[in-house]
Length: 125
Image (cartoon, rainbow, N blue to C red; front, side, top):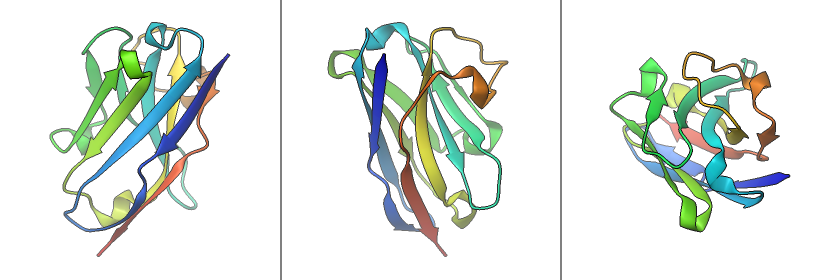
């Protein structure tokens, strides 16, 4: 079993930055690929970024490329999402998720077995 806990959300002005953290516990954290998703009110959950286990290989949705950076520290069992130049339309609940395989072509949320509770990010205009 893997438990995930996000932190770092908050309110930021448009153009600002936030860094989200996702702390994992349970099974060997480094064997999972980790991703961030977000869900805005009234919208479907959306894939944001993913990082491969034990690696620096990453994948991003097009809208965040160049602004967001996903990273991991396996020694701390933590995944990060550095978000720069935030936009009001990126206001959402951000959640981290884990699965055992790496496939950037498959970003469906229902392929992830483990989820955190989410952290609210609000970007004011």
